[in-house]
Structure formats: structure tokens, C-alpha cells
Image (cartoon, rainbow, N blue to C red; front, side):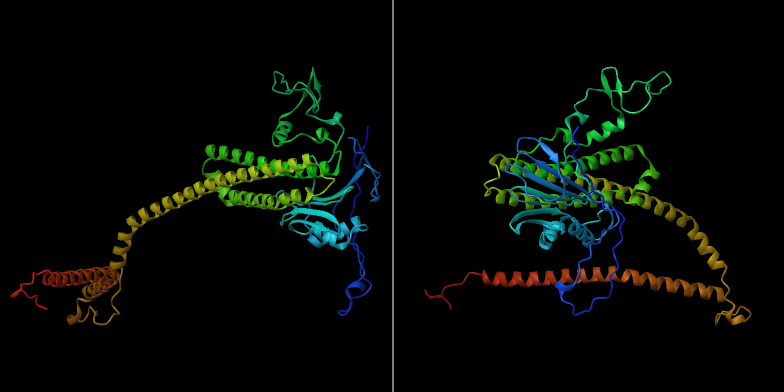
Length: 460
């Protein structure tokens, strides 16, 4: 059986310390290049295709292939939380030479790009975001007539190739049988049972999130144009898989909300589950927007290449159409998430209103009691003109009550003053309108009075 992957780990090697500090006036060309390898694992795969539907693994030597042959070099960066310059340093360590610094920067930078760099067609759909996120996508390619170099962040499903005999989809499946005690009748994992291949529930759940076949079913490219279409096709399939998985997660969350109660809804609000899901959808939309910008330009530039087949141009057009339909699907999912979040917000507002209703009900009960206790608990002995021992000022408590009533009336007038002012202003406007209307009516009547003629002359 043919081994198709060659993985060269870039392990936990610390960068060498600089011998001395660089001076500020040191020329840029005199600064030594230190190849820094970050913590993690970089996977490298090299293939050579003979143009007749066969492929072999090859050494990572960037040697020129023979006639009718072409090579593919793929670098898989690890999904670890590191800065972008460290990824660039790793690519420099792996791809230089023969690539130059401009080629490395065009492959590792963020954002969309489709351009010719040093005689090669370079395109990328690298989205900004944390590298550890499942919704951060990076895919860049450098295409020439006889070689392709690709860089991806993490594993892209179905990007590689494997023997057909390893395909699970080509097997005849069967379900697990259970004994009377409710336990599976066989021991171990997936195995042959009768005439079928036993497949478990978690495997089916994983396969349902895939909208494509496995690596074993990939057609082997016969030209560079076939390989470019295969790379873009796997990128679109990857986006479709992530979107499908997110949609299935949303369906399960909706079922939980229908069955759940107060605790589940409160937990979802505290975890900010739907805002985070909406943020992930926006990241997917950003990657799709990058693809809508880049892939039409790739098709336009490749159509002028002699070595790019016309059938592959049509395949690129179909992939662009798939990407647009995927964008519509992601938009529908985002609307669903927004609707569910709005429902949770309204439920939270309803819960707050209920608590305020109970609080106002309690205030209705205890407010009169607090007023009574406040009034009859007042000590007016030290207030002026309220000395009860003095016969002339024996009604001190009554005087304090009159003072409180006066202050209450004053406060109410302060609150009622805007409304009174509004009514008075409206009344004055109505009076002014009636007065102006009566004046206009009198002037109109004067203008419409017929003029009497005298002796055949019109009075001027």
C-alpha cells in the first residue's frame, strides 16, 4: 500500500538568542535572519503527479519535475495562539529557498489577494481572527505551470489523497444490535457483523455534517488546473461543513429551549451563547466575502493561461455559484439566531417586569404603614414655635403637619407645572388662531364685496 503523507514536525525548539543588540542605524540588509520556530507542529506534504491519474509522495526538495509531471507542496500551520510574524518565520524556514520574502508575505498576510508575484499566480483567503478558533480560515496558494504551493491553517478536510480501500463510504453499513439487557451484542468498536459494517451513532453524526466524500474518493488531478479546482473545492466544502455543523447545533439548541425552563434560558443568557454564535456566523460571512472577491479574479486570470483547461474554468464558475448560495444560507441562519436572541431578550424583560410588579405590590402594602409610623413617630419638641409646654404654642404637632402638607403641595405643583404650562400654552395658541382666522375672514369678505359702477365708469 502506498504511503501518501510525509510529515516533518517542527518541534519545540526555542529561538537562539542574539549575540548582541542591534544598533538603531544598522542597515536592513545587514540584520541577520534568525529562523524562529514557535511551539507546535507544522505538517508538510509533498506529492508528484504524472498527469495520467497517478500520484506519489516525494521529497521536500522543490526539484523541477519532468515533462507532463507537476508537484504539489502543502504546509499545514498549527492552530495555536501565536502572532502572525511567527507563522511567517516558520514559512521562511520551510519554503526559503526557493521562495523570496515577497512570496512569503503574500501567502501569510491577512485579507483577500489575487495577483501575480514573481511570475506566479498567488491567491489567498486568509481571515483575521484567533488561530485557535474553528471559524478562522486561512488558505493561500502559489500556482505556476508545473507546481503548486499551498498553506493552510489547521487541517482542511478532503484536501489530501488516500487509497480507495480505506474509504468508509464504500462499505455496506449495518446498525448495532442490542441484547435483552440493553447492551450491544458485540464488543469493541466498528467491526463486521454479519454482512454489514457496524457503524455507531457518533460516526453517523459526524458523517452527517459532511457535504462531500472522503479523501479516498477524491479524483486524482491530471493537470495543474485540476489541482487548483480541487484546492478551491475543498475550501468551499470546509466552509459548508462548518456551516452545517453550526446549523445542526442551532437546531438542537432550539429543541432544548422548547423543552427547557427558567434555568436553561438563564444559563444561555449568562453564557452569551447566541451572541457568540452570531459572531461566528459573521466570521464565516467574512471568509465567504473574501472568496467572492478572490475566486472570480482567479478564474479571470487563469482563463488567459494556456495550461489551464476550459473545463476547469467552468468548474470554477460552479464553485463561485456554490459560494454565493452558501452566503445566502449563512444569512438565513444569522436571522434565526437573531430571532432566538430577541425571544430570549423579551423573556428576560418579562421576568424583570414581573419582579417589578411584585415589588410595587409590596410597596403598596408598606407605604401607608411607613407614612403612619413616620407621622406619629415625629419628635417636634426641638422645632421652633412647637414647644408644647408653652400654652401659646401647644399646637406644635399640628403646625408641623401643616408645614408638611404645604411642602407636599409645593412638590406636586412643581410636578404639575409642566402640564399646566402646556395646557395654558395650547389655550393661548387656540385663542391666537381664532383671532387670526376672524381677521382673515373679515379681510376676505371686504375683498369679495361687489363694486358698484357709477355712470359707466369703474371706480379705481
